Image 1 (tube, rainbow, N blue to C red):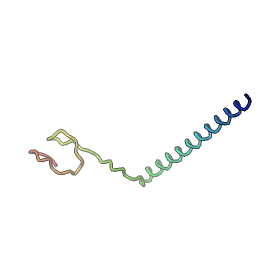
Image 2: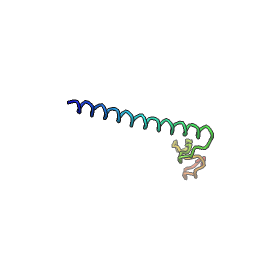
Image 3: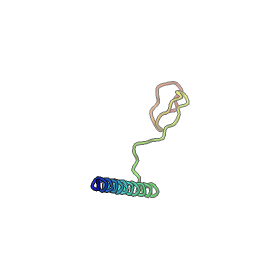
Image 4: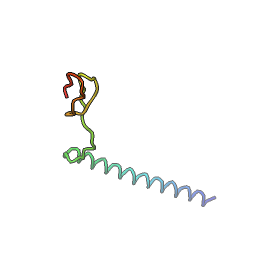
Length: 74
């Protein structure tokens, strides 16, 4: 009976320690990402701004080619 209680306490402690280490790593990564973002060192992930085509009423990448419709601004 005593061993079960001790075992439960040890498992709970180990779980708490693992989660605290994971939380600390996440905080460090978030701080590093924020630091890179502020300094302009952040890598672009391929995300680009989209603009609405007034003719097609669809969103296209800025600087894309004409869609082939009359009066297409691209």
